[in-house]
Image (tube, rainbow over all chains, first blue to last red):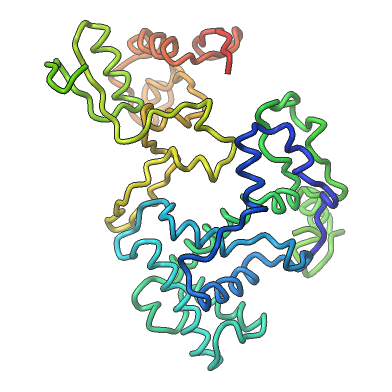
Length: 223
Length: 151
């Protein structure tokens, strides 16, 4: 992974300026990772392996990585969910269990082993098949694979970007309250908003490609 | 108010519509009660500057979305608590343009409204005053009250 254009930026350095209750909540996401109460140990390990491919964090060691599985576990255990399901889909708790079972079945059908034993490109193959709705396995005849993948992905992303380490990565300094944004004109930023050390906009990338000067055979120099 | 009080009206759900109705009825001298499924939030203690935490404002009771193409029942257009979705509504509230009411006459597209801007204007005035909607003096379309709000 390309290093962040906000290398070295730490949103927590701003936390004195947040409202007390908000600061407590955000710091708790770092300091009080919820215990496993919903998933079995095997399910949690499997979900870790899925998260590792969908939201890879190769530049962080295990201690620094954003914990995603524990917050999904907490959401399901406490039934802190959206509350709705689409006709034909079970309630969220069941969707997550079935999704994990489905990943295992597709893995077994394609490679004869469990998902956690697969190499990265094999894991990606399984996940891509589920996302495309072309995955093998009894589970995917019970619930739609593509819709299930979308739901899983959306909720993983919501958990990931609630964590200050993810804010650091994208250069978001955390809540503006209570001081508020003061410089709100085009291109302006408040002193506590970080500036990219490298271009983070996709505009130069598009310009370069139009001019034929961008890197060839890829999406450009930025992701 | 006790459980045995006789009322003129009970409004079930005091969100954007129900709360206004309660107030209008009460102002007209009715004895009226409003019921809501959720808490009476106190922004000073219950609100956090965190999107994930504030999903608690949404209506998240169990429900099923059905039909040929079931939609996402997004939380952020709902609310469970006194005030309903207005507890987390933070958007522009613009008046329609005069021309919006007669797009067929003016532009040959759509349909004209059976109402004109002038018909709605007193209601715009009233609701903007009620909700504290404000805007700049030089607003180019219609009028927005130039009140200063302490938000």
